[in-house]
Image (cartoon, rainbow, N blue to C red; front, side, top):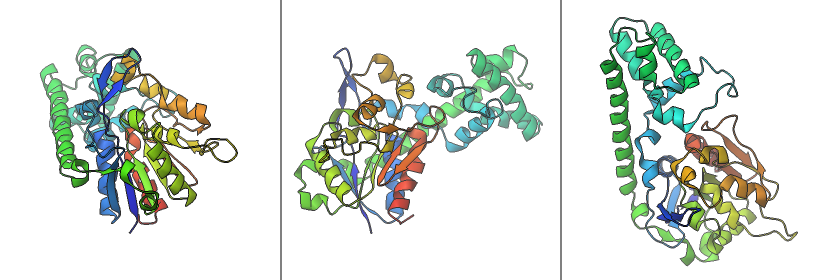
Length: 339
């Protein structure tokens, strides 16, 4: 079966634009889901870090709002589609997804159904309230109560639905952390620096998950350059997700003096998305999106921020953001013909 170099950053801190240090590492969901998908498909997955140090889960990536249960995320998407069928009508932001209670819509609708409301009427009611909350930048709970769109629910009942989502998300984050901690390779990774060129050539693909860590130790690394050069020469899949495409900045020049991936279509965590994150608001020293464009990438981002978007160009596979995790992993399996 295919042998995949699962290249994870071992960075624990990133220097911000003002010179201060900020905790960083790999993004938990982006590291766990592809790993489990690859193993389930029968691939030989070898966890590798640049220096053999144990990788560190970015505390920011373990925040509850990055771990909403899928059924809540899907219902939230069905609500927002009722008032912006075209992604350009209303921009999705991290603020909307994390601070307004909108993702609790499914649980609020469930309480309305318990009161005897039909599923379609409950969906219509929470969609009406969500549209107002979205456009006026208000909490969903405030809109429902203050605008009389509560369907008979009290503020306490609506708040209980929001709290229930928060509890479920925290439990899911903890469960994902537990599963990551149980993976032997994440406790004792292989050192990329110690691998010979011959050993690197034994890999059939490389995959790098995101988190801000790759900006620290994958973007300008001679051993990453060796790995990319060797795999690219054999047209093996080179895949990365979110901030993971920072590893491509380690790629050397071709014989014509151009970057190895000059002219390739690719994506990554966009500048727009970065500016909405906690580290981005503190001020990062550089942006992966801009750096790839400056290197020679033909940048291809999705129709809106925070939506799933994967780009495949020849043997290069890149995913834009956390929402792109499963699709990016599936693209790798398809390229390896083991899906």
